Image (cartoon, rainbow, N blue to C red; front, side):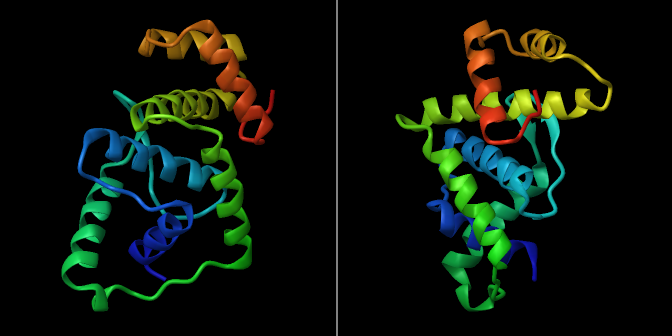
Length: 164
């Protein structure tokens, strides 16, 4: 199954996506990052950028998907998710449903969570402590408070995305 069809299916399951505004694209990046971290293999590779984990290939694919759905929906490949992937989607949807409010606020929270997780995952293999990961993130993004970091850490631990 192609990645575009699978991407479309995943977003249908978690409420769709838009690309009109920057905040929409930021949400797309963070949601796909976490879908993959929960266990959906979409084949995207993320690096750390200004607003946390980012994948330019994902942005390109998302714009291509929107154009395909609008202009040539019959050419979109048929995709299916396994029962295991459906369970992962449900878990990810619960994770995303923990955030209410304006899109910008949700995007900011997901930016914090994904940034913290990304830095933890690359530091984890170097045996870095939570405090060292916090210092690293605060050096890159000074907008987050100590309380923000602690609350984000607890949320990631609660969903099994970080081992404390």
